[in-house]
Length: 347
Ligand code: NAD
Ligand code: TYD
Image (cartoon, rainbow, N blue to C red; front, side, top):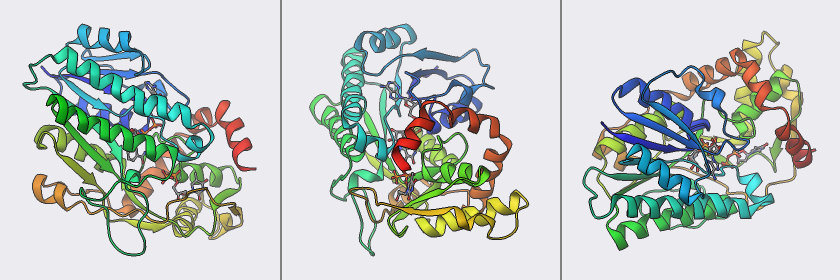
């Protein structure tokens, strides 16, 4: 039986991953370790009732609780997702990003190394990272596993640092590590501070849709379930010590993405075509705003046989429908602290 520690399992990608793994690997013990920040929500995992699933509320920086969790559940596999994940928040509060994303990662590495001792057989520390560590592309070219690190926000700098620490544990202690760097995800259970759920939420509520600068920055979008399938494949088939980039070659200019979301959401809400166009509000650009991300995922495709199953058209319709059907979830997470932050940040 594998005993898998998933950090950040109550967040967007983590909760989708836990649901997938529990369904596919009935005999794996899954331990969700999460401190439940504003972005962590146990209602993301409400429907799970499985005797092999356990939740531990804790901070990844808490050495003694992480150690106890390793001991109690005899952890042999770590999939590390816990992070502060929003670029705008990182610009406001870089220290908490350094604390969780850098110190928290070192803490986990150190406990894995000492708990596993010298017996690294059948052990793996899988670090989930982002393409943002590579900085910004111009009009041409793609990120690949050999691209240089060039982060521009405290978020991407902290993730870059965590990637380096993970590699340093491979080189210095032979810790069996895997790293993947993925492009922007979208799908169910994403906190509505990220552009896609934010736009859907604002269309529903007829609220202004903030677009940074001219809206011509480009992101490469991947449906969360395709990311999860890649994680599953890398965990089980990836070469220990290797890094894999994940992306679906699905680049969109922000303004085109927003217009597409308006078109499809208005349709599903039975509103006339173009009804929500008036909500588009151009605001001051994000400082250090990376122009373009684009992934070359050929290593993952050629070596491990991964390919995305969701076209953007299909993924977006699934996503909008999910937020419309789960309006209670959306209202709940978009209240309280988030609302204050939102007001302070944008308008
Ligand atoms: P998220 O913000 O939705 O979730 C993060 C989770 O981590 C939350 O449940 C939160 O409570 C938990 N957490 C935060 N600080 C913690 C701490 N100190 N101790 C324990 N738990 C803590 O993030 P996400 O979008 O699900 O991203 C998950 C991971 O994937 C992150 O490492 C992120 O860098 C990476 N990633 C995300 C994307 C994306 O588009 N969302 C793309 C590529 C990589
Ligand atoms: P975001 O979802 O924050 O992801 P990231 O910055 O990690 O790529 O933003 C995606 C793109 O959308 C990015 O270019 C910034 C832009 N954006 C806006 O124009 N307005 C917004 O309100 C947000 C949140 C993002």
